[in-house]
Amino acid sequence: MSDIVKSQLAPHGVLRAAINMGNFLLVTGKTESGDPDGVSPDMARAIAARLGVPVKFVPYAKPADLADAAGTDTWDIGNIGAEPQRAQKIAFTAAYAEIEATYLVPAGSAIQSIADVDKKGNRISVSKGSAYELWLERNIHNAELVRAPRGPAAFEQFVNEKMDALASLRPALLNDVQKLPGSRILDGQFASVQQAVGCNKPNVEAAAFLSAFVEEAKASGLVASFIKKHGVEGRLTVAPPG
Image (cartoon, rainbow, N blue to C red; front, top):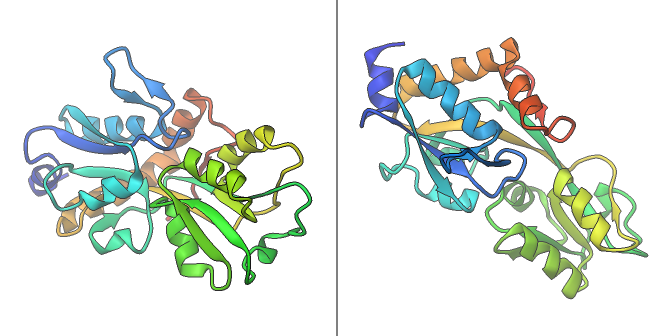
């Protein structure tokens, strides 16, 4: 690790780690000091330890807000889903973990497969600014995307407005399906949300360091140990080598 890397990632003497608080698989609680805890904060702590600096968490309620703050000297690394739209301002590592995204359909729905969803007349409820919403924006060509401000609001919108499908992460849908009798979660996935670490795009040396760190963390079992520690096995999986 060069002095350049350290100066790019900790220009103020601490690693300011932006954390998406809206992902309940990656942030599962808080420490006794009130800091976020979970797989994502543990990744930030491990990076700070490698740099030899303290970590300071910068929480965001929504991933879109975290991404919008890129380049404003608010955070040094951002733990967020990697998407092409965000990569315009953020240099991402390969994913360290993945989460399946799929659909929930209401009772009596004629929709049987993921391919059936993208048809004219269908309305899909989705959380605005989520990684899977950005994927759908690029890939849905016939159905209508109806965006809600947060995940819970997307479920309420889906139910109250009698929409055809709710797009979300499979673990979240496993909870939602219990609240709506007769509803079904479709088999398979339309995308896999790639949870990665990002830094400001001009910081080329820092980006290379972070990419190498993430690959080492996956190969060594560090990411797997964080997943086990926070009890999200089977819902969050270690991503393949980048």
